[in-house]
Length: 181
Figure (cartoon, rainbow, N blue to C red):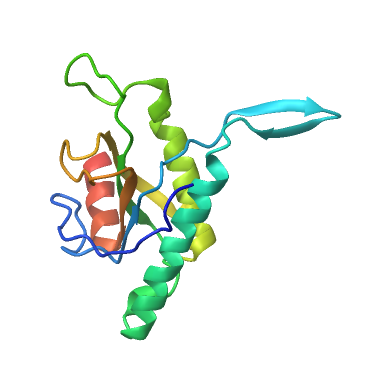
């Protein structure tokens, strides 16, 4: 069984985010394996269940870490204690476990590490369940990566995730409209 989720505020800014230097919400989920959500299997009588048994523990750990971070923010009277709404930018670095016997330094591309889009799905739902964001449909920009423990930018020392969320304001929307038009 995994250790309880630990919350800490990770240092760092998101260069080039086009948002404020510091995220509006930030949480680190430690000592839990990120789990993909989305693959379902039919169990009969029209019922479908998650294929991955790791989804529920991951979502619970991430949502608990979010609630703890929000409670800490409320204690400091920070404005980030309310669910974020409007257009949001999310940056997530997933630290996934490394194979027991890697043949050489590798990228986390094994089936065990999960599909990045499905890791995002479970984590976005945890952000919503935990109260950090009003709904995952508000996410309009994402930067996500998978790394092994202690390797790569933003890697933790054990499986988990560093999650940062920024509100995208009017200036970013105007810049996007200008770039597209």
